[in-house]
Image (cartoon, rainbow, N blue to C red; front, side, top):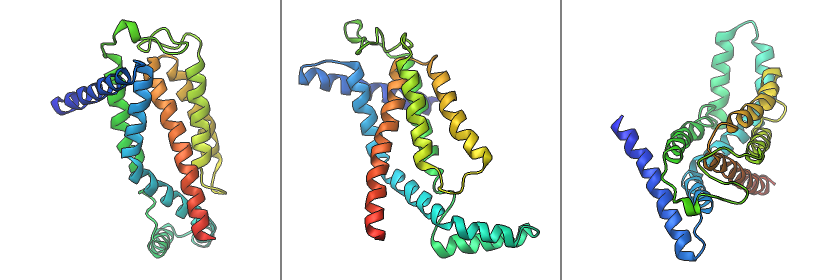
Length: 217
């Protein structure tokens, strides 16, 4: 699609602007440019992240009452669905709102994948830290390990307390391993984007949780 191609080109152009910014500061680095771009994207998406966190916190509070309803109407699915809808409305919680930020972030992640895959790096600055090339995979497997660890802590932080069933617990372990595995095959630049994005959101969510705890106290 032509619109999608424009979006990918736009992301690549943003990366170029970020790289030019590092040149202006006197330390040209595509690695730092990717980190800056990641922070910009996460900052732009922050309002959606706040909405997601509030939805998750609301779902956490509803867990005891949801379990009561599930037990009470386990033989009447239609009545259960109706009562659950009333409960969501009463507490002002939309269970689907927590999915919105994830849906919105996916195009950015995919666009970054294509933008970084075909990006024309200046060979003089293509290396970063231990990485010989940001367009190649990590030869030391450090980034895939970091992507798996950061994804694990993300899923752990966003898990609904007391509401994790067997499948959710399995996914909490499976997803980090899966992300780590596919990171072995992705360009290092993209994995840096994923890791920094996770770290940014971990810190962001921690601050938001603290603020919400103070308000509730």
